Length: 197
Image 1 (cartoon, rainbow, N blue to C red):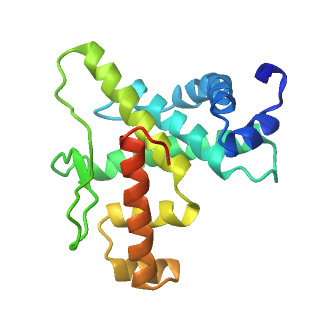
Image 2 (cartoon, rainbow, N blue to C red; image 1 turned 90 degrees about the vertical axis):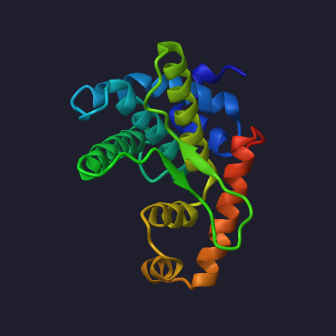
């Protein structure tokens, strides 16, 4: 199939059905959109590459969340900009805190521990590029694999909210939150092991 002749909306429909080639074509099409959005912003302590990664994660979010109510380009541009701005805001909130390089996804009764780590002391530029690409792929895989509810649960959980607080904010019980976190852990484990979600 010649994916290049398909519209963004057609590609997105295929991508949402799990067509990896369609995802790749959309990512390539929106690389310049990401670059143009990122060009206007600055991340203290980071560089344009960090923001480019966040913008590409925004493309994945757009693919996952697109519902056809508007043109894909409009929706994707909004997702890209939101993701870049969120990264900048998060950086602003964290600039006076000690650097925390990893987030643990453990529960009290879990015997497995999942960590998403970013090594900020890489000396070899090639290794740094590979690490950045791997982290971007991991983030994109997580965002593409989780449902909207699971993404909300994960964001609140990583923000330090308790099961009860998450449940209250999302109108669900603590058991529902616990079940969602169990699903999230399993999906992340499959992504990390290269099995897909």
